[in-house]
Image (cartoon, rainbow, N blue to C red):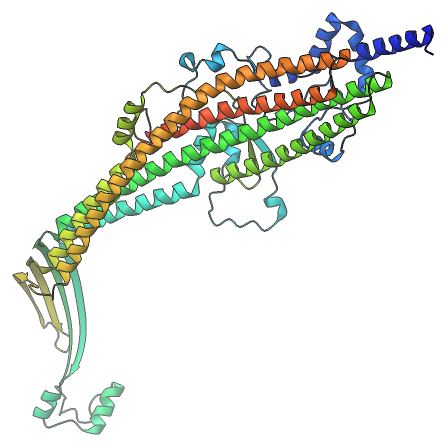
Length: 593
């Protein structure tokens, strides 16, 4: 039968166990990044006993210091290896936990992060800024035929944190697809120069050196002996000097001619207009590629922020799981808990470690994806330097956005330019069966080398008319093909117009929905943090279960992920809406050449 000493021992053990427990470690991601010394000093000011118990808890658990140690934690299974008092070590590119202590944390549902109507954050500009000195290290080699053959040439040596603006600048400078489009534009400009050259006259210089042995003259002179023919081939004089062969003539003539097509049936003017429209088409292609590239870079950057935050969330979940495991172990040691509670906590910690490993793996993949998109140097890698926050707000209505997209989208103008090119091609084909008129003038000089001083010159002026009035209908058939291409371009314009409207509407609706989700997720995160705190207190007081704590930990992790997704999805929708209406500032993404 229990005695008085038994109850005293139980009470003392329970008091020691409760004094070693913290009220809870479920904190916001920003507070988790607070320096360890500051946190301990604050705790010591409020309760000195907790400072003493922190040394005891350090022997049970250990905090992950970086991504590699996080992987070691995942491999370690359910054994506790870190202290719950130590802060979560986040990657150097952390966009949430690296905010100053005075900054408002991501998890707080305040007016600045949730009231989008009063948000003062500017919309990310699509015009890249001048690169910082460290960014220059990320530029790829200027030789496109670079082919690494050694492992050290592709080994990542540096990771540079960059902002979204710097990522856009790198993309515009390094992206291979954009460079190809610019080369195509340069090629089109040279084609225009070639077409404009048709306006100038054509100058031709021709020189002929001729040595002729006339058969007719040979017959008139009675023929030439075989001996004389052989001697002629050898370059020797004839056997009989008195009987010279006058059948061989050597002459040198040259001619200079200028010609100009005064009428081409509309072919020359159509070629020039078609070349100009082709240059405009390539300019629009570059503009469209720049806009698409900026959207892709923005989405890749937001994906990079998301994976970084997922690592932080997974690390915070590991810390919460370690705290629960420590509480369960201390209660078991005091005789107030069961082995079942400890096993549940160990399983939860192992699951969270696996999730941390997956997050770290996804982070590495995302970093390499954006490196490929930006065409970075072989030995360079980037991380996100911008904090995760609402990028801005959209002040236009849906109808205004649609009209603005119709005015600005390069894809719509491309179809109209393509229609004009097909019209000029139709005229070029019809010019083949129309009259062609040209004028010419030439001057020629002729010299006979057998007679010294025998030199003559002359000139000619004239006009030429040529008309291929019948070709079996080939030119007309080719013109009809161009008319069909004109109709196709018109249909493509209608298709692109409908696609543009859908893109604007889709991005607009996503933006509005995610704006509401930010407020809901922020509120849910606050409630989940409070629920976990209460669940821990109930468990420590003996009126709750370990299952309640684990469930609240899961809900807190889900709330953090939901808020992260709401903010990043809002930013993605904003970037998509900006792309759908093209560049808002000046409606031109590239300078006209």
